Image (cartoon, rainbow, N blue to C red):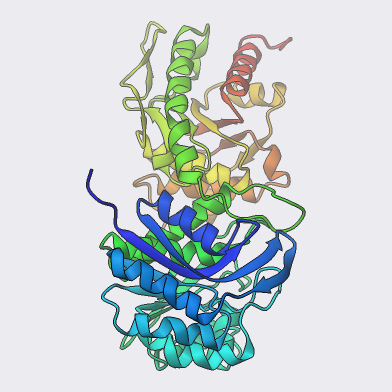
Length: 458
């Protein structure tokens, strides 16, 4: 087997396992590299806070560094909690002679508020670590500390980034997670260029312990694999966003991201394809189902856990069709990313209601709206009049915008189980039926068929 690139993490240990060395090694492993470590501090902490810190001697930290770099080829490294000026000075000589990219996460304060950097270490970081950083990754409070200014606006971010670049790092990523906004925007600044906004969907979760460690370790791993800084940051953002969406409660405080999320998602995909195949066969045999198939063809989409794009959504490659004689055929086979339209629509619905995992587009024919009402299906309508000029009918953009806006603006967004539109030039009006799983979907379809065919009893 080809050797894995080695990523070295120089950081503190978190006994709770959510941040520090533990988070770094999980991240490095999940992203396909070999993790080595130099432990700069031991913390007694859990999800609620840090109760004690014990630092090894600077000499022992130096011995750890020497043991690793004398024997193992390091392809990238990151620093996290360096704690004190004496430990920073013990690490610095190894950074001066490095032949690998270095990501510096200037850890100062834990999520719980505990101070992780001594006062004498602030200037030592600036003098001995920043000049060797290929990328510096402060969050807003850390950027304010080292840039010695308040950051409240986008213009402040640009000024702070310029100040930080003058301290020596080749690039600076100011993480915007602490700023109040609908999205989470990180700003990447390099000498001679305006800061680039790198936007991610904000994840509403209390489980954010160790996000900075996870991101910087993921960036270092990307650099070890040969990615440039921009692509390494984007890949790392995607990994962290997925891990946050897959997070779970651990302990009584702020839990960590789920570092195993990519593996969990990939493992679940085989089951999603199998469920889609079984559902397709059930639909083809369902009495009265052919009347629900629209002229533009139908497709059934099922999302993998934590789906965030149409590539995480499985559908049939050729869709579902109905013949004039009323026979239903499944065209093609189940595949992830097979339907941009239905896939993007389902992902948009999940942004409003993550419990939704299935979506099927139905004919909005005679009696369908009455059937929806009789079956007790909560409907949200898309408003064509509010459509921005940049929303086109290509590549599922219209579908994504329509579903999200209709559900978001409904008085009870999480109760919505169908999204309808009135159609338009060259566009058939459709009903997008939503369900939490295949069983729920089949029950709703049967109810709609019953309500369509029998006007007195459902």
